[in-house]
Image (tube, rainbow, N blue to C red; front, side, top):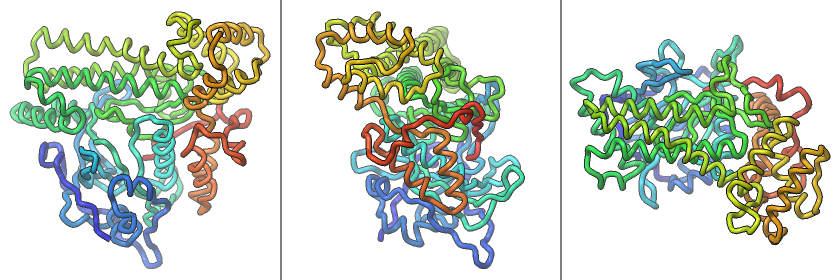
Amino acid sequence: MPAPTLTARYAEAVPELTSAWQPTLPPLAEGQRAEYVVVNDGLASHLGIDPEWVQGEPGLAVLGAREVLPGSTPVAQAYAGHQFGGFSPLLGDGRAVLLGELAQAEGGNVDLALKGSGRTPFSRGGDGRAALGPVLREYLFGEAMTALGIPSTRALAAVRTGDAVFRDGVMAPGAVLARVAASHIRIGTFEVVAHSLVPRLRASVFDRLLTHTCERHAPHLLERAPGERPMALLEHVVEAQARLVAQWMSVGFLHGVLNTDNTAISGQTLDYGPCAWLEDYHEGAVFSSIDTEGRYRFGAQPQVLPWNLARFAEALLAGGGQATAEQADEARDLVAGFAARYRFAWTERMRAKLGLAPGLPGVQDPTAAALVDDLLAILAAERADMTGTFRALAADLRAGTASCAPARHTRWWQRWQDALAGADVRAVAARMDAVNPVYVLRNHLVEEALAAAVGGDLGPFERLRGAVSSPYVVRPGLERYAEPAPPGFTQAHVTYCGT
């Protein structure tokens, strides 16, 4: 039952951006004990971690934030961030810790981290803890996104700490999430170097952070001259974020709190606090309790990310010393190019959702784009269920009839049929089913599962997890997981930054 071997390459590369960590959770009272709520055995095996170690007492002690893995150097990470447009010069891991990096058989490393692990120097008066509900929420969303093929952090385990935390006027079961990520380097990591470090340290730390980031996420950039690497990394991240947001928008995912400290350099979805899933198609949809102005509404996500990337560009220019006019112009051009990259990635995904393969004789780029835009306009006007509508199109195609009655939908249907003229209908429908999910994390099912789990019944959580683990395949007995929320639920639904 060997324990995993963790390195501390990030902490060694930029010690100025880390703070050493030791367990800080309060001792358990008599009769209290930590226990696993859920363990991701499949992920453990994929990562090369012995599932028996995870399931045993040594693994529980480490992943439950009670003990340090022998030989490891756990740290809390420093970072800054623009939160709802305002700059915070020092944020950092207030309730998280990076245990270390785990080497992968296929090459590269992944981070193993904890959330809800207790106070750190960045806790800013908080207790550094997490409640069970938000921990299980992040677990669910990471698994659902991964099953959809969307880059995401994932959970290795959720641990009930055995004690309680005070949240929103009530006591809730305490929990720790063991999270796996390509890395936890964020736009905010570069911002803290560029804007918050003392000038005498800035250049050295920036160079080491840049090199480490390239090693982790874009090693080919190390072949470039040192002076070219900042803008090369910017272009790499612009492309990764454009693809990521296109994927979000194509399935109706709403992140909810797209601050720069929640924007990962890796291009993975990071932090699932107030996220939600769109049902009624509405670009103005907002669910987060703290997004009172709708800054991070669903339809704004493709505009928010280039704003964040502009802050990344500023940090890269400032961290590297005195930027030239040419470098500043290049940075502006790269950020401005996000729109075209996003539109290309989004259009490609939306065309696939409608079965509009580029090679079909009736499909020209303007035709496909108009069909996509017009269908979304119909969905918005009718507040139709996004997931259900796209999935139903393949069945309609096989049947040769439109299942929706409104005249505008019928006219759209005929245009779509014209674009598909001459195509093998069954083959097109099969391709559509492979990209239009049946099962997503519908908000009412998430809330139902979390409420039951906090109350001690994991059945709804496990059934929902099972449904979204294979989102494209219809399975008997799972009909309720494909149905929209009851009337009125979506309009009243509010999400919170629980982790």
